[in-house]
Amino acid sequence: MTPAPTLAELIDSVRRDTPTARALDLLTTAAATVGELEEVGDALLTHYVEECRRNGCSWSDISGALGATKQAA
Image 1 (cartoon, rainbow, N blue to C red):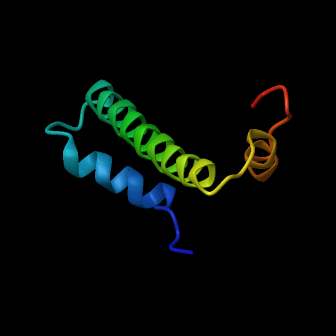
Image 2: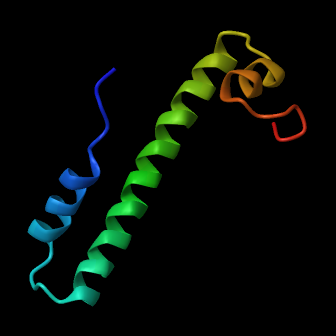
């Protein structure tokens, strides 16, 4: 598996993407970065959940693979 970005890599990215070194500006950029990562992560899971459904997997099977309870699914 390709490793996810490390914390150090993300910190460097935020610093590069922020036009100033002000703490609040860095925080704003970090929050935007986290939002983007969450969106991509959600889209990735949605893609594979839909693929599982197309291949006949039940919601119970999918939730089990995700480590969720039947009620959560």
